[in-house]
Length: 364
View 1: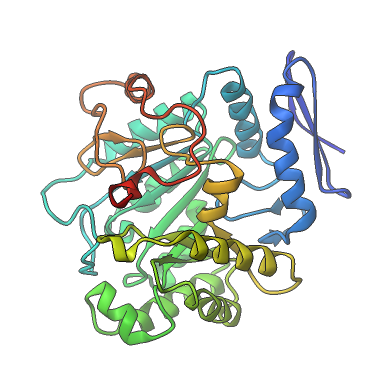
View 2 (view 1 turned 180 degrees about the vertical axis):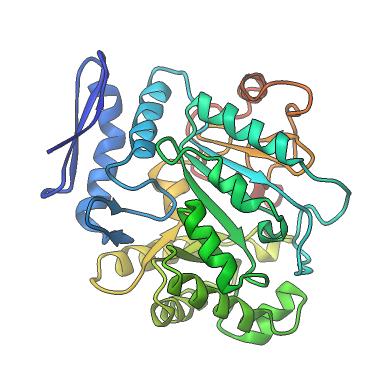
């Protein structure tokens, strides 16, 4: 039995043998529903990775036990009493990217956050209680100081994730990422068909480079998530991508609902149910990578995280609920992150649990 969290109002124990979390104290009844959901996942689903001293349920969550997971539990307790904090923070660190994706949200415009501005963001969100920090857009590996930015994150407080299209990774960079303390490297692969993937990326050979990057990262000892976006008519390719993920040996295949650009691209309810069926079948089957599906995680499990558990810092410093919601509520160059979070929360746009993606509602 490991004590994960102990305060005057809440204690949480983790039984590694039973893979179960148990709360005690005055706030126990308020946080136990979330722990019950986690316990159900621990009991019914294979983890992404089991190591000597900890277990990674999903590459999108801190390992159990760990300092960042302890903070995650504390944040759930805060949310239970109506004082939510952004457990997850994503930061757009550059506009530079070797890919030319049509869906890119930031390729128009100029400028990016300075190193000092980003380290200030990190310091402030860690003070607020954040425990998952993801560097993203366009390709963070094109920032020379990315290794220093990763190193700036206190590993006792938060895990560091990094998204890349996989065009710039070398053996040297992979080793530096590991030495800097990167928790998880996320590499996007849109299709098992190289031509389809290259068309999305707008670069010939992008598919081969992404797969090479995955192999380099795994050989360097990094945890790797292969990520994809699925729109209407593409659900069947999940199993093809899972076969590829298994062959590569990644720890998790992450399936996100793609942002539709027309009503025809929006996933139907039947397609979403099929994604959840695939999620349950794969995660209840021994062997192979775990699968993550935001259709389940932000649908049935926790609801949309935007503005509730998630805060996004855009490349121009503006604060949004997530990368896909375009409305900005403040800018880090003008106010503190704490005040920016208050402005976002005070907007009234992120109340209650929402089991659908608000960014997709433009197509009803």
